[in-house]
Image (cartoon, rainbow, N blue to C red):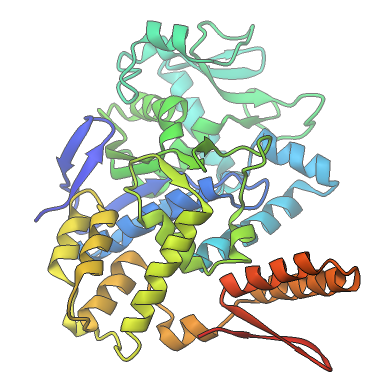
Length: 443
């Protein structure tokens, strides 16, 4: 079977045909680094990691670019709120992001450009758009002229009237048309810093950052552009418009892939609703492979209802698979299970791949190879899975033991028992000794 992918641009499953079989090129929108990675950041990281693994198996070379957005008002507001410098905040946040996604077994990408390192590229890009009448200068701002691009709306499949009437757009006295979007904006009273440009000291808009970085590393026309479904409009629509206005290509990428929305217990994740989870919070209770497996259990393009029940289900599957593969070592030469590979070639159907693996009657090295190389799970070995406890989980266990000790001192034995049961549910057994409480992993 050949690789098929659901293409947002064509609105159908398309067989994948690379522009250059010697180098498949993919760009995925990465995190905006103002705070710890949340589950909404983690899902695309895992989704496109699966695609990256698959492409690397099919083609000799894959160039995977995932950017870092380190120019954004959210970053500046967060730095002010925390009372630290912007570069200090972004460096720390990038380090935490790498740590979190590595624990989800996400492979390092080939190129990870940061917007702040590409200001000259962005300025040059904008300058060329002004020169070909696709952009205009207004009171120190530079805007993309949407009316100059006849195919605007091709990705989101909306016409201009629909977009104007049905979508919240930025209102500004400096724009000719309501859908025009900013490429460069001047400094203001709140964020009094920026970079020198032909239009004054300022900073780039969000959309132009990705276009400039994608073009620098992948060229004017590449294979795959990915991200969350919420990026289709306006971010990806605007990217495509400004990139094609400069290059005269029909599309900056042939295939546009988007993972579905993420809900928590059936409700959209939101800090205000109290159902907001960071990856780091969940890593204190669950191994990264559990979180990864939970993502894989839903098709990437579908909305996912993430819950603690889903995590427990994922953990149960992994516990079983690590048990049945206890004496099985991966041997790369043995290859992968063909039926699982066929499922992944069919628009990365990870739920079907998991179902096939769950029905396998004979567990051999191909089972381990398939899980490890394509799905990014079963990487620890059974001994490591059942006995090894992460530093984050150790910290969580010790906090729980301290809470239990306090509850016992206060004669709140119901709470003490509840904490013991919570730890037991997480495979941790407590033993009270004359020297204090000790714990061990229930294998």
